[in-house]
Figure 1 (cartoon, one colour):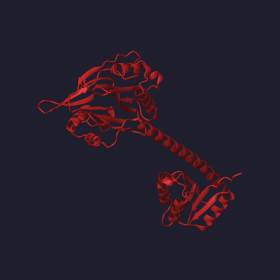
Figure 2 (tube, rainbow, N blue to C red):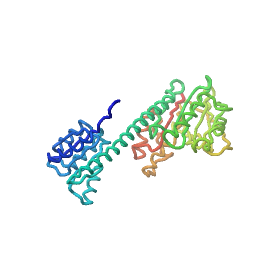
Figure 3 (tube, rainbow, N blue to C red):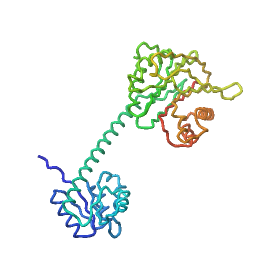
Figure 4 (cartoon, rainbow, N blue to C red):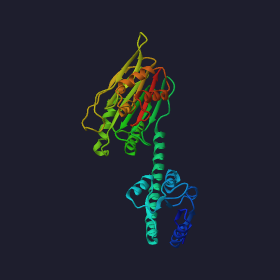
Length: 382
């Protein structure tokens, strides 16, 4: 039978008598004890051996116990190491200082061996729990990363040719509720959509991925994928929030007829797609493409309607989630929002690089972080 690995304890004290007493008491309990005679040596040995527990004298020449504690707690590899300050100070304000520095417990001088051993046992139990939590956190993060890679693998590659499509997907966490796709229904009809499931993280990513797979495989029951309103009605029937952990979704769905240069579209609680066309005088005309209706899953009996837009040559269509213009709400900016974003799209009409746009979005809204999932499609019609 394999023997359990002994807990590793670092004792830091400039008094050789205390080091001897503490080490003997702990070794009798079966622990591996490492000794340091000053603060700097204690920090060096802590980084070298990564002990489970550190018992450190508060008052020492050079680096005192508080500074040792600060350096230990700042080291990434020592995040779960339990730190005990050894001190003769018994005033409450002293303990407050020690706890604020990062100490986990205190041991009073003169040392009572029974209390020392009991506190070490308690500290090692807490250390083991911290390690277990850290391990579970790492496993969860690895699984979330794997799920995020899978979700990204579902998203389509950029399209080139008479129709050029580029896209960006920026979840505010590892996983998000945004999703989009574009695919040919036949050689003359191109389907384009972007959806946004309420919430963030895994709970939003799962239904988002499910809808994507249903639409891509055209396995949504009774849906005519050439008719946007019919797709939305079928989605609403299949994804009522009462059966989806109270999740609902917004969506913009369009079908482009290449030969007629006509775009049929419908939306459900989603921001309007923005179509930029050139007027005869050379100015840019802005068309907000949206049909009024509630999000998918809110009401079982909801009527969705389609509308139609002719697409002139050299037009640009943007389809996006609301995270791209609600970014300004976190800073209280009154100059941002949908209208501010539309002005930015007009200003960047000839700029095909979406990274440039996202940089301008952040600068215009006055913040560098996105508080919501963000997705955007840029479709250029030659």
